[in-house]
Length: 110
Image 1 (spheres, rainbow, N blue to C red):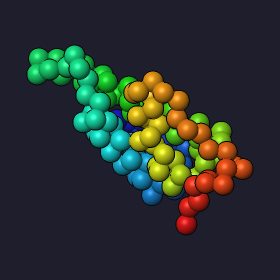
Image 2: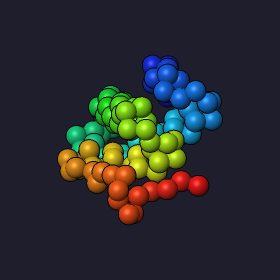
Image 3: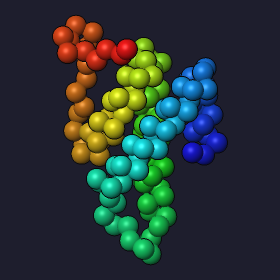
Image 4: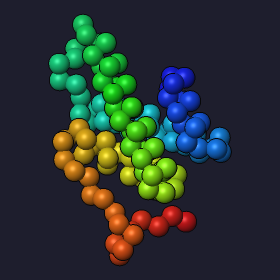
């Protein structure tokens, strides 16, 4: 993860273990999404397209994490749990299922 993204995480999270966890989940989600939703125009001769798309996906996840964590009060576990689903919804251009506090199936951490 580059310095700018790491700096963005450090501003959001005070505890180093939270930063490490979110950074790990962002990298996993991006890597998995490249396997499930490959960049179709990329090939062996255009690796920069894949690098640009990887950065775009990571930026989306960091922005999404910031909104959920800072604006909506989600915890680290909940953010990490929903991160890949949010990225898939973005890649599929669908709207992710949003949870509300009165939802009986609300995710509850330990």
